[in-house]
Amino acid sequence: MIRKFIARVFRGKKTRPGQVEPAVISVATHGVGRDRLSSGSRRVCETLQEQGHKAYVVGGAVRDLLLGVEPKDFDVATDATPEQVRRAFRRSRLIGRRFQIVHVMMGQEQIEVTTFRGELGADAKKDAHGRVLRDNVFGSHAEDAARRDFTANALYYDPTTETVIDYHHGVGDLKARTLRIIGEPKSRYREDPVRMLRAVRLAAKLGLSIDPEARRPIREMAELLENVPAARLFDEMLKLLTSGHAVKCIRQLRDEGLHHGLLPLLDVILEQPLGEKFVMLALANTDERVRHGKGTSPGFLFAALLWHEVLAHWEKLKAAGEPKIPALFQAMDAVLDAQAEKLAITRRIAANIKDIWLIQPRFDQRAGKRPYSLIEQPRFRAGYDFLLLRAAAGEVEMAVADWWTRFQNADGPERAQMLLPEAAGDKKRRRRKKSPNSAPNSAPNSAASPAASGDTPDSPSSA
Ligand code: ATP
Ligand code: MG
Image 1 (cartoon, rainbow, N blue to C red):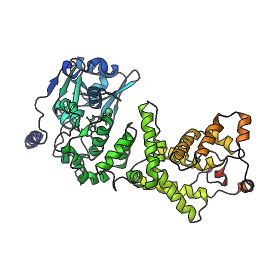
Image 2: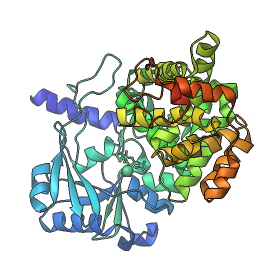
Image 3: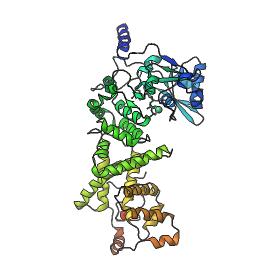
Image 4: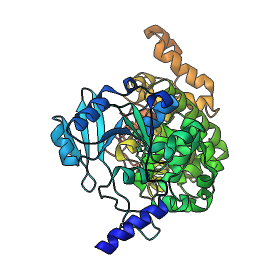
């Protein structure tokens, strides 16, 4: 017991230098007044402090405020235990089983309150590659700072004194616009390889440069990402792609050697000559939306990222004689299954992705009643936005996209005039429409029915 304790103290000193006395930086120096915090996070800190605890706004919010960026959300770190925090706030609940955190509701705002975490003990559970599996001991303020990833993310703001508490020279690093890892980069990446992706994302998003010490090992350690659970990678990729700086992030991932053979998704994005233009357009489009405060849909984004994969598979299957729509179903499943090994795309998002893809062949049909029923589909809007992207990338004729733009806005008589003449073959096919449904994996109303080409309800996957 005592030996373990001593070992911990010494390891702490060795691998986490500079954790003695923190710098306490006054508002005159850092310039961020308490009025810049969200009212909820301020009240949470004040209440906990009144009860005799330490409590600070921490992490991304402090970093962003120091950079003059609007924070996404405000987290609080405290020495109160999760149970103490829960008791201090009526509208609060405990989250998680191993390391519990507390969500506190203040008006519309939700504040995540975390108890200081301790240093990793020698007995911390790790996988064969050194990735930490469990990390759930409480600790001191200094230990909490030391286990965070980058110096700029280990800053604590005290609303009462308006000071920033800085154990790792984070304020100075931010001034120098450097993202520096706390401790020894290789061992920090081994503990959690996702930190490599975080480095790229944060640097791109905030216009910081990754400190050379932290940057150098990334290339050789990239393969450790293969070990990270798919759900965690999916979360991180989603954050990256919806950061408002996806184009920059993807370029930087490529520069750091983080894309190759790692995530099938990134291979797809960066290594398909035809698709690159389409993907970059989709990402630029998403970046634009994020920066204008508009929502983004993960389904739309992933549908775009994987579209050219689907196209390639689809073409192959059609060339082998598979009918058009069953071939599309098979291609979609093949592409999504290939991603699933590394990236846990949630079922709901996968359903959205399929909806968007399945609606695409239906834009070719501009005769008869079909256009009328198509624009009534709940997923029409997303499908149409996707069509615009395909047109912008040169994959479909702009005239087709324009037709749909006009058709939506036109009144009754004008719409009737716009319809293309029905091809003879089309009519025949419709007469045969009652034939049984033969698509693989399809639900009862499958768009794989012959009319997939036509008036079927929206995709079977739209759960
Ligand atoms: P964002 O602006 O994307 O929210 P963030 O830095 O706040 O960036 P979060 O995932 O919200 O990112 O994490 C909050 C804080 O938790 C970070 O600022 C950092 O201090 C700590 N943290 C998050 N992920 C890790 C990690 N993998 N290793 C160590 N510390 C981490
Ligand atoms: Mg955050």
